[in-house]
Length: 202
Length: 185
Image (cartoon, rainbow over all chains, first blue to last red):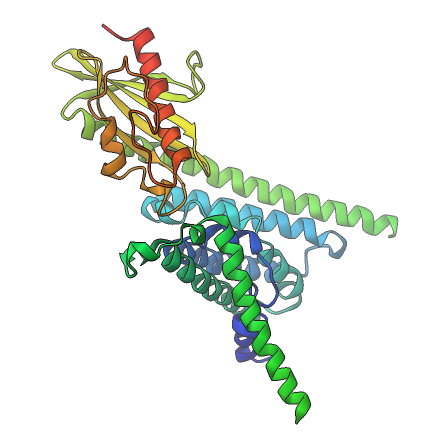
């Protein structure tokens, strides 16, 4: 297995959000602003890499018949411990990331990577997979949140870009998340179909 | 599944869970004190910004004794030159996406607010998240505790965030009601 393949798969070929449609709950909920997406993305990259390493290390000990409950327990404990440590020793980081960490416990991407990759591969590969899938997740979040923040508030990261007359409140409310994601998926599907047709015509 | 492997699986899963529980317990026990100290320091700096150069004493805490409304988390007094000059209410209420906590500083002698600070919120960015901004929160300065506040009436609500505005208003009203029954002069 090549490490470049792991990154290709994680970032675009099997992008967790845009291709696999996993982790829809955080995708829809936290993409109201670019800064939210950065916070969530950084948290997921860190936790996913650590959980992949941990699961891969323990892959020979975890009983196959009870692997899912074991993964859930390990991921939940890991996230809780990291949250408590950050809260206690890096309070400034906790202010910006604190609200995202509890949401990660229920992020199905982490469980999916544990089940389909980390439990079957060596520690190094598992670590790179965590990094790659986390990166792909973050890039998709950045794309959605940039569109939503720009159209909804006319600003990016708090800097005003568009005049307030063009602000569409709906974009930063829940319906805006569905609209943005739907349009992005639609555009991607259109180009994928086109490519397929071209291949068939040749 | 064979009986043997069933027992083995249960034992292994039990062991893994037990180790995880011990790990969480261990980290929790060493971080709890650090967290509560840093939270107290943060709260103290808020106290300081409302009643500067005073001594603060927490006289009510929901966690220890509960005989006030559920929404009042804690009450502290600010003492200056041996005289209680103000009360500091930490009040929580439900916003649009979770708890909104406000600190209400009330002048003990004149029964009016000095200042209200939103200390915790996770409201919609660009809408409810504007609650801590001066444009909204400064409206609560200098209000008599006899007044009953109402969003869209004597308090101008944040555009597109009536629920958040009402949450802050409710927190302040709770503090007023409790102050009027217990501590007014």
